[in-house]
Length: 588
Image 1 (tube, one colour):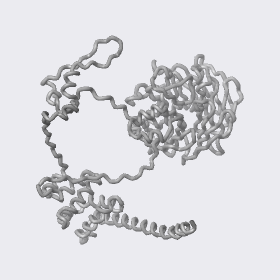
Image 2 (cartoon, one colour):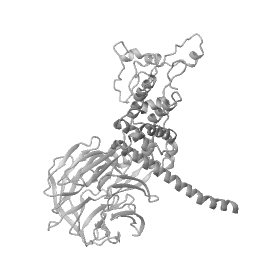
Image 3 (tube, helix red, strand yellow):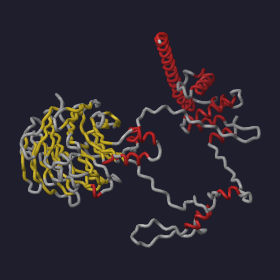
Image 4 (cartoon, one colour):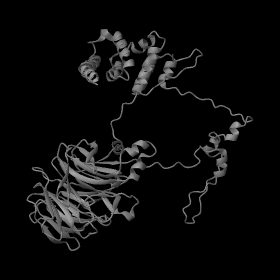
């Protein structure tokens, strides 16, 4: 009953549907906390993107990410470099607004990358010219390096690591790898081990002379700038051109990706350590990120303490592919821990230290940037939750001391000009002595019952209007609760019949849509099946008149038919298993 014998209306009790058991791992939930992507349309395909590195001393983020080498431990400044069409674009970390662009390219730009100190960028081009720019100063070209004399493209450029800020490596479609001195603009050495396009270069973080190259000849070469012969070489896979390579921060492991394969190599022995083959199409990019315990626990907060211990922080390997997936692997076990699907082929991506922001460039020219939610700042004192004594004591509340002898700030006294003046004392809590004091009388505050629109309609016996209002909420728990209340109203089904009758095809659509979705759901079958019977008892004669209603009837029939077929198959399976289980129990 919606009302008691005394005339007091009882609200409809809306019980949430029982939740299905979650199959998501705690780490997957952690990765999914990244917000919805902010989409930025570019003028062409996003061929490369990279976050700006700066030394650890300049930032308080204690995590490091690897993009191909550097000295010491590095974190990420809040700038993102995007290579697109004939320009390099620099975006702000917080606002994703364009801060600066470098447009001094006569052809398509490739592989825009930062120097390890984050103050200089370099990029190749379709004409074989590598150009260097200053991040902080003008957009003018600082230096031009002519890699290819015959005009073949240069698609891979990397600055050396290990504190070597004066040299960079370029790999071109002429199958040559060249080592440059950027202070003089001279070519120091040429390495000719590849027999096809060289499309990827990675430098060591700790060694200023070591770098790794990968080419379309299916081979990877580890080079030392002091010698012309490769230190190590291995074949990535037969008929698998190498799209990207990476030297991990430890300097003892390397990663190569091409075709659908991702291979982990031991640099010291040159042996294959693991093969990660979870992509369906060509893998284009590989990145490394370190997830620290502090970052993970701070993100999870107070909730889910058991989940916090069920997965561990550590190094992660991220791969992007033309199949639209960005996948995360745990390097300790080489297991896949998370996967994200994007609507278009992923050509490039990059991740900040601690996985606080992820930028993905796609083939349709869209840059998708996902960030973690910002931390909630503590609310200011005196927002209406203080006791009168606390307000009197803290009206001269001093701001937090900065330890530099600055003059403290004071809070003004509450007066009738402030809205909080009229709220004072409402949240006052009695102390233990005051609670036990019988001389203090506390007046009970009348509770105002806020009724939902469907509750107001039910209170006025407007059953049809109540059902329509519940359907407008699009909340299945509310709709089913109202339908259950209509079934129980009066006990003779008059309320339910009144709510369902005298409807046209358009007004029946929301009801039929709800039934098609929940008629075979075990959680709602107790309510949805009687409603379906009552609905067809009223509208059997109109079947075949309205195309909209007939379509929903066929959908409901197919839903019920598929559920009955599944039940029959389960019964057959049960019949086959019972003799086997009985025989096993008899033997025991």
